[in-house]
Image (cartoon, rainbow, N blue to C red; front, side, top):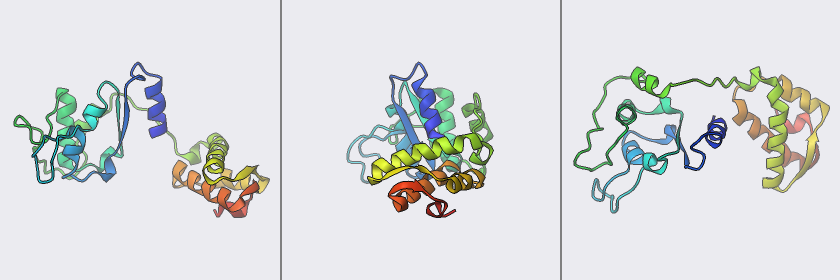
Length: 197
């Protein structure tokens, strides 16, 4: 998803502005306001200096919210308000009004509508068999560079295994398996045994 988002950013009129990816799954409801909107000096214990947030960092460019569904409902409310009003206040700012608590226990429908201007469907790897080998070759080259190996490709059985596996972990799983296989093979061809599928 991030790769596709970055590609869209690079092809957009915002390509000269920042692309800022945010792993929403790693943000607790306590950390999220400061992470997204920044904070002023003295806003809370340990805030020894002012800090700019992701919104400021991505200004004019693209803020990519990965796994946005993992955000706490309170954080969803703050994001919704910031997106609707096109403004925000750093934590500790006297005019900060983005911290309203929300008692909903599901993803906010109104935030989804604000984020959902248009949809790009990225099919799972099991439904995109034509992408498996190009991605495998791409990850093989990365692995060769990172691990200082010299693997030149995949033998017939390895290819068949890659193409028939269901890939429940999608591209992340494919990358992990190729990295491990290249490390085991070191040189020559990756075999079915190297893949450990």
